[in-house]
Image 1: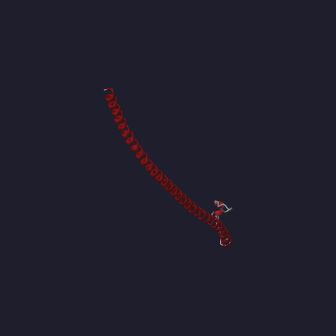
Image 2 (image 1 turned 180 degrees about the vertical axis):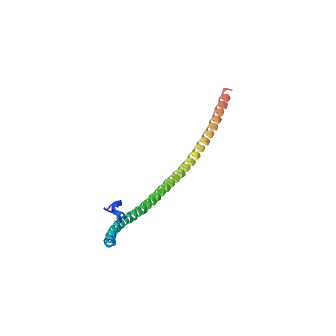
Image 3 (image 1 turned 135 degrees about the vertical axis):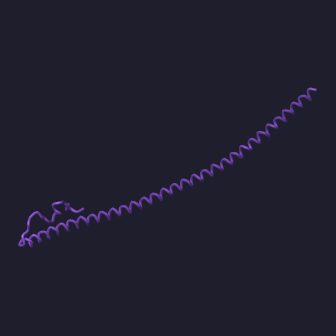
Length: 134
């Protein structure tokens, strides 16, 4: 920002409290013009500084918006990657569960068949024992 601070005293270009005679009008008008020129220079300097600040802030805003979009894209990519990994893990779990279920069904069937076979053997032994006892 400009080193020159605008104050009421610096911006006052006309002092209308005094009466001006016709002979003093030219001198007073020249003084007024010089004061007005000084005020205009101060105003222009401050306006130019404000324009620079606004341009800087606009550039910063654009950069921040780009950063936000970039970060949002990265977050979306990360979420998509996590979703893909989760989906693949779930597919793997489903496959494993199907295998476990098939194995469990096989073990149950084998157990049932073995139980039936044991019962038949027990009956056969009982029959054989009863036949030999006779």
